[in-house]
Length: 462
Image (tube, rainbow, N blue to C red; front, side, top):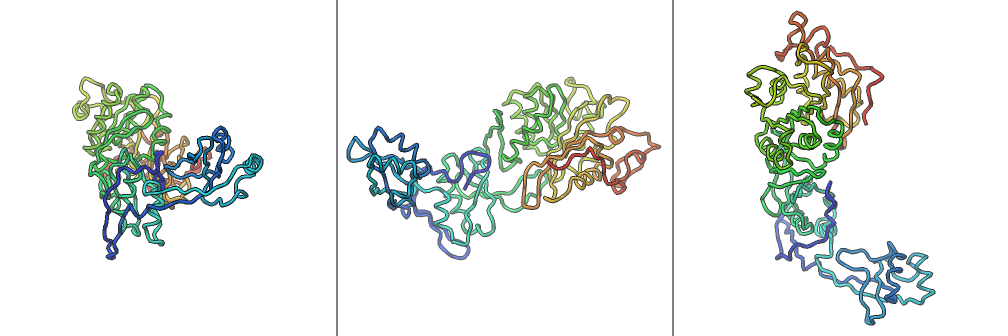
């Protein structure tokens, strides 16, 4: 097994403590036991007897032919202080099995090959090796987990259900940094995108701290959304921002985009509807000393953007910006990081900006969404245009973030908003859509009237 994102995987062999025998019963009535004493055995291997002064050269020459097992040194003491025993991997049974370069040296120097016994116990076996012994042959060993601070997050399959506590206990044993093992239960259906979890082993403590590119983020894993697999994506998008640019982070979570952008010198208005995310966002702003650059808000995403560009005294009061900044706020980038539903919020930009107040280029919009694995980029853009209620234009890129499932990928659609879509129009030019929002009937038609984009400058999925 391996741990996603972190460098420590389930192959880690560190045993925290020797515990009593743990016994549990599956739903089928079968006893499932983790008896650590059952792993006591003797490993018999071959070894070369080599003069002590030549061991280093022998080890470098043997390479992959050396014994490689957790907590076992490949060079052991011999009866004589003048020699050492260099242990060989298990499938080498005679001199002819070792690599040719060392075989020649061994024959020339007359090195003896001898039997050697290595006493093993539970601590010498990786989590994968332990679980392969304990689980039925028809049950696949879990291959990976996500590590969030000291919390190991598993997505176990239905076949693992009778053995989930056993799996959790082994992971806890074999990964010294892990204090809690949780399993995702069901699908994410609440508006805050927080999944239900069950504790399989360890402490029921979900508050932790993680680090990304030198920045610290506090969070309660049971109350806010966090995905360590997105670390590179956070860095990728922030790298596109320039110091002093203004960022509107509409669904900012605990600050994975807002905090590094603020550290870079951007001015960031970060918002999240989840009160717990808002609370941890405030803490992370303080921890990383970006309070002069980043302001946190706890509003609905549409309301937040409308207030930000509203320019009224009501907007200032609701945002709590009195004396801090004047509205409307002119931002260079808008981040929409809620892949399950962010695309549905694109309509907020249709006719949002007052042309008499807004000057310069329209902002870049960075919208995260899920698409089918084989969905063409043209169809992805059509989907965005449908929700936006207007064309995306020619400055469009679609970045493949990660595979979520075999037929589901997460992408980031980035485009510069067109003035013909973003600027307000006179009431005579407008039509009223069924959702109650006013849109220009001349320059950006109804979603069901949007033509298929054919611009040659549109970029394909990358």
